[in-house]
Amino acid sequence: MTFVAILLVAVAVGVVGSMLGIGGGLMLVPILTLFLGVPMKTAIGCSLVSVIATSSAAQIVYVGRGTTHTRLGMTLEVTTTLGALAGGVTAVLISGRVLQGLFAAILVWAAYSMMGRGRDAEAALTGRLDTSFVTPDGAEVAYGVRHFPLGMAASFVAGNVSGLLGVGGGVVKVPVMNLVMRVPLRAAIATSNFMIGVTAATSAAVYFGRGLIEPRVAVPTALGILVGAQVGPRVAARTPVARLRLIFQVVLVVLAVQMVWKAVSG
Amino acid sequence: MEGDERRVSKAVQWTLGVGLSVSALLMLAGLAGSLAAGRRLPKAVLEPGAAFGQAVHLHAAGLLSLGLLVLVLTPFLRVAGTLVVFLRQHDWRYTAVTAVVLTVMIVSLFVGQA
Image 1 (cartoon, helix red, strand yellow):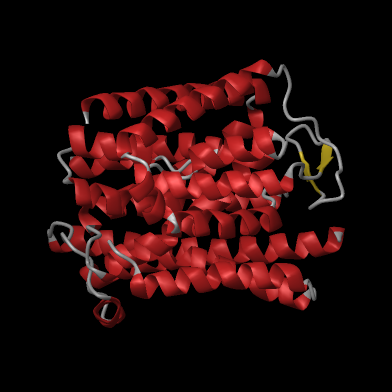
Image 2: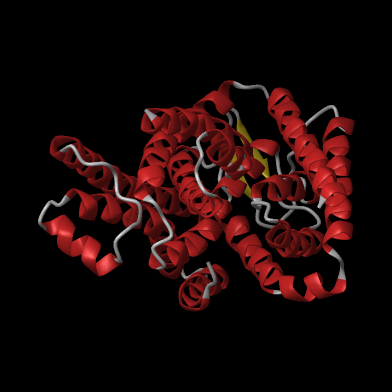
């Protein structure tokens, strides 16, 4: 019974996560712990497995359309990882509550900025990491990356802070690429989806090595996600960019509220 | 450049497709085995060596653990595959960038905290 419940939840999380370029841990961990009685540590291990499944299954679709910017993703992966490694320093410098508050403010700012523009980041070649992808209606979008150094700095901060706050990277990576580097939203989502899989794989392997992954929960989650994450990119392709952006803004605001609540109660 | 990108995509799709199919098949076989034996799913994964040994003998617990292990290792394969593609394209800058990513992934395996 629980098996079927986990499987169904995972399908839904896989669809939403792969549509937005986020891991889905934000949704999965609370559902597993609060409603299905799964212990926290098991839920986290399971969430890592689910991020890998979301990323890998969705990438088959995104890479096929050329939406994933592999070179950009690899580059940002380096800065994000360096940021995460430097997390300890930040933890000493800034108190957890202040960090949560600042983070919430940035999330709200990102949600607002995404709203401020009527259109997606205007695609234009910049001579830096120029590439192109094909949109669902068959048009080819050629674009390059803008504000490269600023984007690198932002992803360093993102990697630094997200680890400390226990937030997966996707919610931060998509706005950094879209707002700072002016990467079209669809490409930002696909590239973030690629990166979160790489980041989660390392942690998941460590969890696996210590026997902290429970097949009882992880197997139905993985199988459900593998199905959901094949569907998500196809649903995203039929969803207008404006609506994708709106859904993403809602996620940002919900996360900001959650952060404020943690800062106040915690 | 255009043809290069397409080759990168094909290689990546192939790697992910194989990794995920193998993983899903192992997990489904493990599930079928557990159902047939009327057993509940295990509470912990086996260590990699034991998982492989048991999976070879078609024991459900081994198949389930190995399926999860293959899933977890799929992104490693993907990054390694991308490294090979960049290397073949003589794209030294991104060969180096990807090598850094892969190195960090592997080093974290040994020093990582759960």
